[in-house]
Image (cartoon, rainbow, N blue to C red; front, side):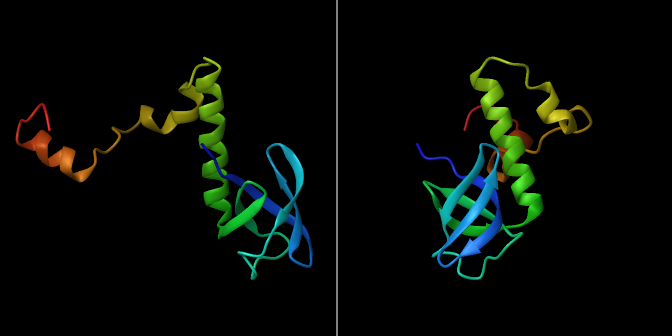
Length: 106
């Protein structure tokens, strides 16, 4: 399975960019995101940028990847989902409709 990594472009040289992510710096192929420039955030798969993302998306993705890494190592996940302490996570629409009807299986 391939998991995308959010990265920030540090510099651009032709069709490549020097980018920074959670694992450090790397050279990334930018041909699929020709409008991306220095300071922009991108989603990278296998050394190639696939699309530009917002700084908020990049942060959310980093948080999710850290939670996956913690889960894989058996660490507590409480710190990653602190917002769930104050709200009930929403169900997908089809499951919420089933819950309202009193169904216990879909």
